[in-house]
Amino acid sequence: MKTIRSEKRERFIRDGYCLFENILEPEMVARLRSCSDEILAQQEKEHFERQRTTGSMVLIDWEMAYQHAVLAELIAHPKMLSALAELGFTEPKFGHGRIISKPPHSPPLFWHEDGRFWDDPVSYTWRPIQCFLMYYLTDTTAENGCLRVIPGSHRKRHPLHDQASPRHTDELRAYANPENIAFQQAEGEIDVPVQAGDLVMGYGALFHAAHANRSDERRTALTMWYYPEFVNLPERTQATIEYLEAGNCVTTTLPGDPQTLMEPLRIVYEGSAEPIEQQWTPGPALK
Image 1 (cartoon, rainbow, N blue to C red):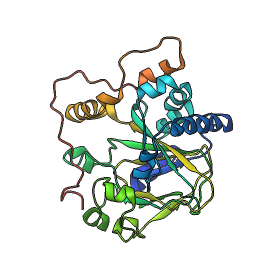
Image 2 (cartoon, helix red, strand yellow):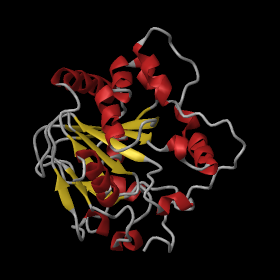
Image 3 (spheres, rainbow, N blue to C red):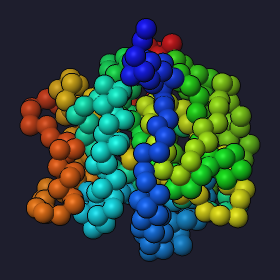
């Protein structure tokens, strides 16, 4: 008889994503909603005009987390760490996050996968180099823009790998061509509706998108990027991650403040290996 832990881990490796319910308490969801609304209100109008399909793409780096204690608490949330441990990842590292907030009556988010390590042999194994952890701050359905995923597309070639743009282009962000393949229904796609406070975790290389927000309310998600296997990855992979995330990390700490919770999650590589160049397009090894 398999344990629940092994079953969940196997599903995660096979499908490329999993759902953990009730990770955040209602009080913390409310604090995060207030914090994200405050940060969104500080953005220029042009930011939202450039991000019609995402709604917003506000960077959450270590400095922002130092300024907003609730973000630091989220980054090091004990229930999140327990969820990662349930999948076998006991020493994750945090890179950065994004506030992705779709306004009312906004278009769908395009199909994409965020794999940028396709020149790294690890990308063709079960090991996740990078994972997204998504927290929605309101209940989601197909009506207000819930997540869509293509299970298994992180390890198996899908037609979109050869048809969709490998990058987040200005044209896709602006919804310049609604007929683009990236905005259409895709083979094998499923919806992932969630309740506020749930956690959706997925491989960075998993194809995902979101429905249009046809409701009258804003739909905000906080997407946090972690490296769950960092300490077990090859040195060149570690060097690549450290190089790519260096600009998002501050080097000072604030003893006694909630931000110190983040310190065990800091990316540290002190070797001499050369980083691997970023590659957004999978090679022929992805069958």
